[in-house]
Length: 254
Image (cartoon, rainbow, N blue to C red; front, top):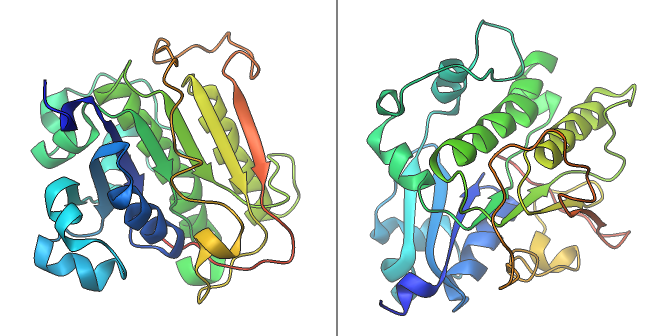
């Protein structure tokens, strides 16, 4: 078995956003990861990596990084029972109905990072915001469960300070609901990062006091769980909420 084959594989949603870019750049340089899959609106070739991911190690990126274009709306529609439903149902959609690139991207994943997010203003409406920050998150989780049902050992999600499914505020409520969906997925290790309000021009990985790859590193003794365990408690799922240091700003965008 090659050395690369023994390393971790990482998939990043929202890979071209402010936080996602930093996760990709650091993961490519981290020897623990032998494969990095960055999900974007369009597929990129290696000669486009430097412009999309400033500071990336070009040689290592050519070796381990693939940027896969995904249509989140199409994927979400294929997993929802009806228009307007904000939770993918357990419908029997054949694997072959998903694009080959998507199937390959989500297969044999060890670690997953959900860095996608927007705002009501940027999305254009409350419904469009919920579509991105909740529906697409659940779609990401559903695809991991489908194509890497037992291999995912660590799932990390960028949320927000104050996120709560019971909040009266749309932004906090939507983030809280997405966090609950992540915890409920049954992955062995779930980490919810809750930074303060993010500003677009900051380098988030350093500005918020955490290393993109250190919070993605997987324990070597983590044992896979079944893909869905609704009866397991949050403690059993070993979910962890980690706030960022206060007073720092950065913004994550999809």
